[in-house]
Image (tube, rainbow, N blue to C red; front, top):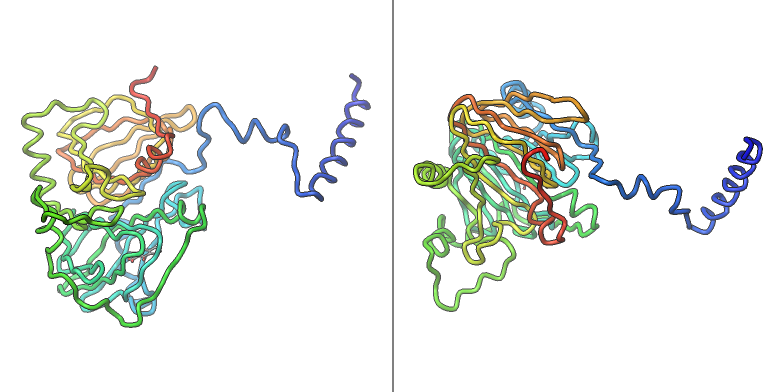
Length: 353
Ligand code: 1HN
């Protein structure tokens, strides 16, 4: 075929495609190769937010805006490739929230589900449908979809936590709803610790059937999960890909604690080196204790990311990676695994073949 014939076809096609656009149609054959790729093509990149660097910016936010005016005083952690999109990975939102002594973040509710992972400070609390829970560093708290919630700080120091939300997933589907409560705080309901008493002892009242899709336990204290990791580490073989990794579960179902976000706490002992691992999960990590490195393949290069206490880092879908710990380390993480699993899309690859 000579080039003038080719040009003619292109012109013919261009004209035809233009006509199609006018009828809200498009030719699949021009897009198929980009739409359906042999392996995931991911915009988000592995990245780390150094807490020692952004802490100052975060504390500074208190002199820029009050919690009252901001409603939620949060620095969003945006993946560098997803600027302006309020996403830390393709599927998840994360931010660092600051609440100063005496402040209140007013009551509201929304369809995205949220988690809090406490980074620093004591005396902070959150109330979920009127049940208050105080939060300590390393505690994991759930705010289920459409649950009323407000936060406060009865302590003497700033309180900081990482928020994780399924916001991009909900936005994608379109099922977004939010309400503001007419009062600043939701009225007190069940006493502090009630849900833990009801559901945290492997027993439940006869006839009790929690009607939610998230765990009725909405606070998982670090002291308990850390102790469990420590004790298990004495009797359990290390997983070559994860060290010792525990998933937070809903004790009434045995499934993931949240319906749209999987949550984990893992222990990597000093000088542990994991084998190469690849997963379709989009995972955000928050380092609770220790330090180490992440070695991750980006295109054909190996990128080394150094992490330490309180840093946040992400490994989006399908980047092959390994962990190397310098000291005994515990790392919290959250991902979209539970959603992928429900949809039959979850995949993983262990090792490099
Ligand atoms: C939200 O309600 C909170 O309740 C935090 O603390 C972050 C990000 C987007 C939308 C709602 C909170 C949020 C959020």
